[in-house]
Amino acid sequence: MKIENKSVCPVEIAGGLDNGIRRFLQNPQKMLAPYIHEGMTVLDLGCGPGFFTIELGRILYNSGHVIAADLQEGMLNKVKAKIEGTVLEQTIRLHQCEPERIGLNEKVDFVLAFFMVHEVPDHDKLFSEVKTLLKPRGRMLIIEPNFHVSEKSFHAMMEIIRNHQLTEIDRPRHFLCRSVLIENR
Image 1 (cartoon, helix red, strand yellow):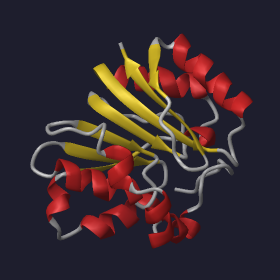
Image 2 (cartoon, rainbow, N blue to C red; image 1 turned 135 degrees about the vertical axis):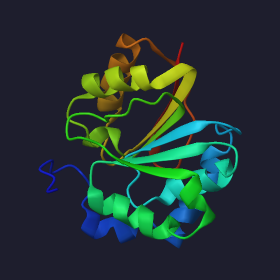
Image 3 (cartoon, helix red, strand yellow; image 1 turned 180 degrees about the horizontal axis):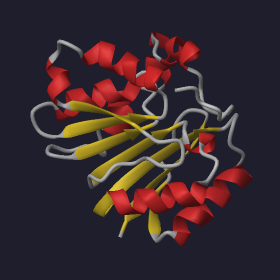
């Protein structure tokens, strides 16, 4: 499927999203371990080539599962190539989002949205759907790059989040990022 949204990171540069320098600056284990617990169902929304998906799968192996969701089939194919023939195949499930919606029916405990909310044209529609996907007390970690998302834009996103009765519970610090942890109360 050809993606028309010009703000979506193209599959062709996916290799740059999965490298050792990034692992040093954005260590998935350090960033996610405080939020992920045994038995959880986790949605990696806009998973790209699986930089965070793989680590989530390792954390939840034999005790939960990960839904790796992306709009682009090419990104999901990269994740599939990484997990094919490994034990992570039983923990990680691939899901292709529709252009206007995530399209899942399953309830989740945690959603990771790393560097992807700014790529979504309709934040109101996104957070409305996220609200229906999160279990009660389910959480979402949103991490956006400072170089794409201004403080004003982040504030506007937070207004939409509050309008959907999702509650801010923390503002974790991440290198050159704006971050928020929200909860479905």
